[in-house]
Length: 262
Ligand SMILES: NC(=O)c1ccc[n+]([C@@H]2O[C@H](COP(=O)([O-])OP(=O)(O)OC[C@H]3O[C@@H](n4cnc5c(N)ncnc54)[C@H](OP(=O)(O)O)[C@@H]3O)[C@@H](O)[C@H]2O)c1
Image (cartoon, rainbow, N blue to C red; front, side):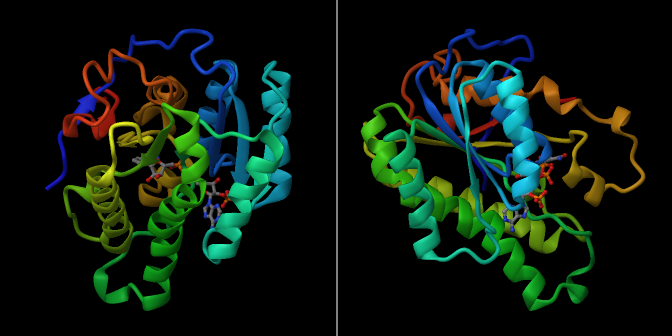
């Protein structure tokens, strides 16, 4: 059973310099939430490492960060569907060689294809969900763990999906991958010492995005939340805002976060 959701008040805003002097990796930075999270982190003072699968799309986000006045970012290209241990390690080494530190990660990369009955979901379809949505965020975090530990107060935000906790027809491999991710993150948290990086999950709920367009074709963007309104939640989580973590970062109740119901 999933841990309860802590709702992040829509009015709760981070300080302008909440992430000053921090280095933050954002995976899937060319996607809807990844791009917005990267821009929000840069605006809050972070140097962002932008990860994506396609270099030319990353270049656009790089330019946007610079145009918004953010510190010069770095781009990292890696196809998570095929990445191996050496490549996960290489990603961490690139960050270390460039910035010597890493204070946080937003895992926004996401594999999401058309929903369909379980009888149609092939082994290779399941593999892709597992590689990108489960294996990659865990292995990237693992590869970066020594840097995150050294950062003292580092935070990792994994993105999940409400169907992980509420199975529903046609969401088979996708929702199962998110349920597996949530289980693994909860397990990892259980292994963490008080001075280890804080791991948490963020469940955005329905937002106008590429993934939503795949799972809900035909839905108008105006029918769901504007994703730009929740980008600040990633800054609040990465900054360890005391309104969200009032007592102890490792309280089980602080595992899963979400915006208020739409
Ligand atoms: N949208 C919603 O309504 C909603 C609801 C609940 C939860 N969420 C969660 O929010 C998170 C972000 O969702 P989103 O809608 O912002 O996603 P999105 O717009 O579809 O973006 C996904 C990102 O992941 C990248 N990606 C996909 N496959 C990859 C691969 N093999 N290797 C490297 N990168 C890869 C994409 O790059 P390319 O563009 O190059 O493929 C893109 O940058 C997900 O975890 C999702 O489950 C979303």
